Length: 120
Image (cartoon, rainbow, N blue to C red):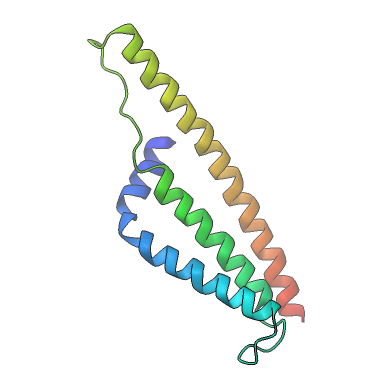
């Protein structure tokens, strides 16, 4: 699982700046919706901006976290080197499970929030 997340993260590393810019834009839209800036129509963009901020934060987390996964220990490595690598990889496994659970939760939240937004 972490190898797949690492491969996705490595392939999408170029989008890190774009994700940051999108996150800042969505956050700006959120703030302008809260403070009723005349350019935005009151609360119309509040829910989509929250969803955009959450997705951009999750995507940034993917790119930033899983780009430096340590490789599996070799047979000729010493015991403590193997132990160190296995502990690091187990931490990445825990982060991978947390990331998958967060992705499912954000996906469900997105459907709910867009349903509410569309009903308005």
